Image (cartoon, rainbow, N blue to C red; front, side):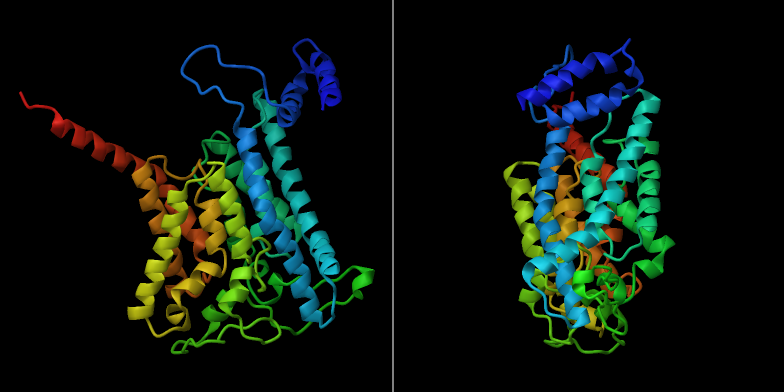
Length: 403
């Protein structure tokens, strides 16, 4: 590392004021601060002096996302070979999924970071590191067969209109990765719904036989619920995989089901949650309250809900299907778009969990629910903080003796 640091330090005069590449100083600074902890400190004002800057925080979140990413890659291959009826070993399944997901990951980072670098150069500011996490999340929350050009357009739209126009990292109102998914959902609905988008059906690899799959059912469990006729009774074995076999709670918890790359395995997501909580990066209050809000609302529907399969599905199944767990751990806890005050975090999380289940059960057109619930609560995050602060002010004023 010392050898690499010496090379970086020798290049600094070239990118500093008066150097040949001074206009690219923000690019150089971005790479340098990514590789090494900055040794600069604040000169005035009240600041926290700590080596854990925002880049290190973002990298911690990326590391927490790795278990979900790795399992999702394997599951892509697993679902594919199930669909074509071909047996394959663990590494062949993983390699297939890796090659399927990698292009989306590359497009996400190239487009998003390209815009970040361009804006930094235009403004003459440091490169903002928020997209380190966003670029990693986007491939995890979109269908594996989403065309790359759609991913590029949606990513560009989200970074420009949901982030940069608000002032960049730390100022955005909405979660940027979710705006990417929302853009795809409303602009290209056929690429985000249906059976085959959740299982990679295009096989361009010679070692897998070069097959393309036609006529199979790869609908997600939530998709199966949303298309069930009203009056359908939910029973054990109602949900099934692409082979027609019943999906158990264990299958859903471990992630052996069709779905977005990073959202299928609740176990892998909880491993990431443990990393975030141990390092103090995410709020346990928001995570817990999202699960609590979802469980309570689903239980209410179980007892007094409409006569639909979605309303009758056990509350614990709702928590392990779709993007509920992923949203609770990695989306709702976004420090920029979530509340800051402790009481507001409970309110925010409870409403996200409740709204996600309400949307799932009462609106079959949006079988997922978590995306819209989090984006809706992003709007009210600051309001919840304001209400809590004003409530505390009123309580303190009452303690002041009246003259």
